Amino acid sequence: MIDRNKSLQGRTAIVTGSGQNIGRAVALLFASCGANVVVNGHRNKEAIEKVAQEARDLDAQAIAVIADVSNPDAVQKMVDTATEKFGAVDIIVSNVSLRRKQSFFDISIEDWHDVINTNLNSAFYLAKAVVAGMKERGWGRIIHISGFDGTIGASERAHNVACKGGLDSLVKALATELGQYGITANAISPGTIDTVRIAKDYPNLEAKYELLRKLIPVRHLGSCEDIAEACLYLASDYSGFVNGQVIQVNGGALMISSHLEPIL
Image (cartoon, rainbow, N blue to C red; front, side, top):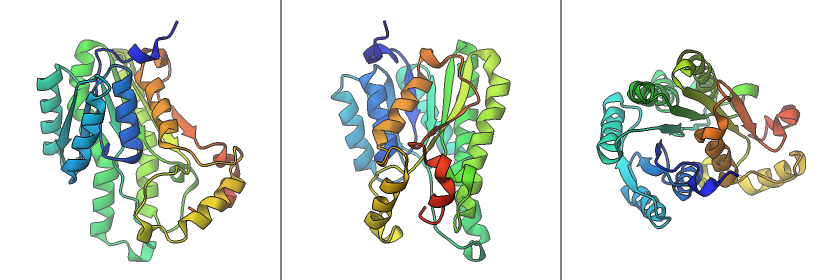
């Protein structure tokens, strides 16, 4: 029998970008299954403290850590804080993402480096900071939240598309090299998820959502909890033979991707 409420008992997880949306859902589900959680954000201390308290209300241990994960020193400091508090870091979920909509002609060199550093380099920094401890203990889970625009492409998001594809490729490299030490690396590629978004960055969002609901084979958008459940599986002992995979969680949208690209 699988007791999901104890499936992460004694494990410690860092979830980046966990002050809201997918990251919050992952952190709280992990907490409900027994994990110690490190809730991370870049600026909004109040938001991550609130999520950490929600985790503690689930009888988990949790801390909130402000850290700019595009800075390797800040990432190392966060890992050191987690290790000092909980003894080790067993699970990492790299979830931070900038998703700027910019024509390729308008992407500056600074824009490019900013997005690459936040979306892709941060995942490398976090993995680099934890793998030695995982290897020593003979167990670890590395999870990247990528996106299916990294598979199908998307206009006006060249930097983000490059990052999503890079995250998928990075897990394959990590999986190949680290699997022998009991460390698995996988990516979850969400489809369209109903999240809190900044309205000015997503004009006509509800109209686009309505169209997507008609196109996606399951006829509804995904939820943050859908992604969290996939993360829970990959973070647990039950996924020990799953390694180097990109798990598509999109309601079948990838099968009709040619209809979706103009809407993304």
